[in-house]
Image (cartoon, rainbow, N blue to C red; front, side, top):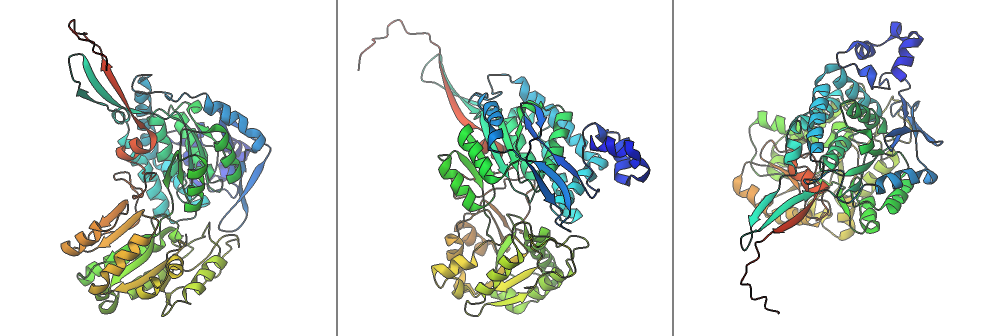
Length: 551
């Protein structure tokens, strides 16, 4: 393993404090960890097929988003390598690896595994290992990366012990006569797939993977190759904690190859987290057998009630976090801010956000590389917006200076563009432009009066993505009117409302779409990774005097 090679060639004398901890830690990370998140070259990523780690001839170079240097290699499967994945996935029956009537011991096994993983992630050394690894491949502040690890740990704490079996709790109802009853069961799909993006390299794939496994499915997991080393290491921890490695398939490949794998294997359900365009393509090609957590053009509405100056400062801090933490690369990031004129005209709220945004810097990664949008794409979007009547840049609008971020990635200041609500709603072309999601440090700001609230609600209705939303108001009548006429799946309401935040204690997912996928909670796992099966027991006795009338 990389760790032992590093130590045995004399690296121990020069080892970082982290690696000294890895070698000596009570959880003995050296028994499973195979990469060094602090080394210039992190390591390599393999695939999992039939319970074995497998390398392929094709190797993709992964560059460091901060300086462009090669930091890892990912062995990617090509078209000719897919048969192993397809055959392995197809061995799993539609009744799954376990279900309420088959091998229920496996529910208990995954409760034990979850308990061990939670205990492992409590260890400061392991927590630091994954935090630093996330920061290397998807540069975000330590607080953001650590939060991802901690949410993942709390998820595993929630499902340690009996809660895995409780996911499949059934119900019964009396029948029409003695000997008849009906039982409703949560049933696995069997062979399934999940595809996850770059922005949360640990939390999204770990939580969705475990949901699939808890319910008895056999999943094939694909993570964006730029960050898949995080999940590669986490799979090794899972295996170390008792998860059978042959319960999972782990594939690294490009999008076209993954599409081919799905077409050949025909999984019973596919969870996709990512862009709306790809989501719609998969929904069509997989005949609707999908669950989607796709694009998020997320709104925040600030009501007419303006609180004290101290509370205004807090709300400005939260707005800056919602729009610009992790450089805006969250599907829950604040995309558009509807400000009541009481906020826009009578407070220093815009100046407060501008001031906070200006503090963000590369040194502490409160701003960083934009991994899916280039500077040219952001600048072009801003230029197009400025063609709308009375649109203007409120702050930002420029590229970052003095850095080594490669040109294939964006490097942009936190930016806000004001667009009057009349200009936004002028025609379909204008509305489509304003509500285009830019997966970076960018937001639209507009204002409205009491009489213009219907226009705000019209804009919310016309949006196609309904993931998260925030309603910053303690005015009960105003709040109820907005909540009653919108449909975002994860909506925060009240003075502390936010758009970002995907903890383990509440549903996180879109609404308004029967394909909508949630993550993290009992309801989300049941909804995404199981279906309803009804068994009607009709055991007799058969009445002796039954007329047996034909009809």
